[in-house]
Image 1 (spheres, rainbow, N blue to C red):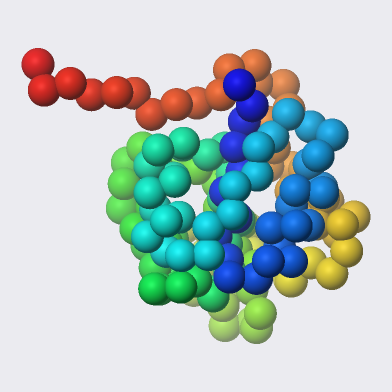
Image 2 (spheres, rainbow, N blue to C red):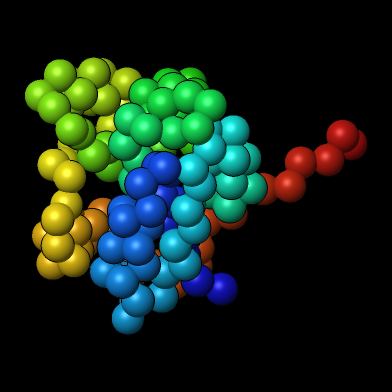
Length: 134
């Protein structure tokens, strides 16, 4: 089973860049343009890394950061925030973003930003434990 990166953005280019950047590594890239879908996929898959920006359907990347940082288990997932202006960066960091990056223009640029946050030596992907009512 591969590891997961969740791209939460309406911008299709970001998802395409991420898929290309990690295609040779054992990572599955999933794209969610909608806030509720991003939250669902995060809860279901416990991704190793989340990349988001401000633009989501039904909310913003800031809303996603806020929701995830309030969850003890999900709050540990590193989140890279793609900022479009200087004000975005500080707000994203205040809400729990691990790093704020400028909008990547090239595959190499995006790969260099992702690499420090990828767990290439980890053999077993994280999974959220199934809870029973017993």
